[in-house]
Image (cartoon, rainbow, N blue to C red; front, side, top):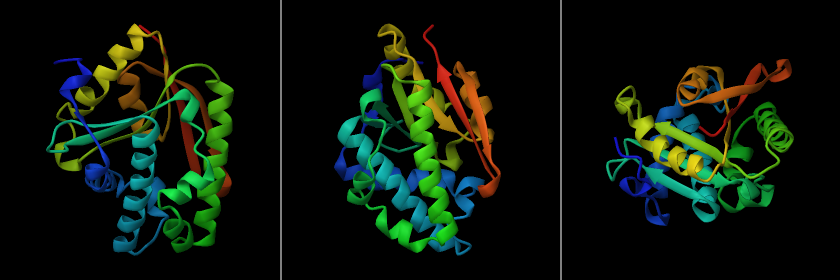
Length: 205
């Protein structure tokens, strides 16, 4: 398996929408997105818009890759000095319809976790590192090694540059990231929103 980043398909503005659709499909049944709406079509629409925002921001300030032009999976990386996404950037890349469309409680939850994640990120990784902002593999292609194809080239580059990698995730993904060398540095629970978050770091090998 090649660890050359050039073997991946680097995205541009013309295919960000397709990447968003793949990620929305991957996240559609995830518990952390189920609160978006009980209307499944609306939920899918809001997840797509959220994914479009993350990939658009990452395209502008970081890097976005797909496994190939067939888009079996997608990944977004940010440099550490662009990890604190300002609210106006969310607005710029289309989050207003999501914030206005979801229930007040969900909107409050989204803004709360965004603020908390930024504070925790600064607390744990206030030094040069790579931020794994988004990783998604199409459900039809999961379990076939596509995550390794997406991640290993960047890990190889990070190790060469002596840069650790940081991410936030949910319980279901912890074993996956542990497989790639990430360690849990904090787990916190917010009972008010019935939600947990795991913060993980991959140190250089």
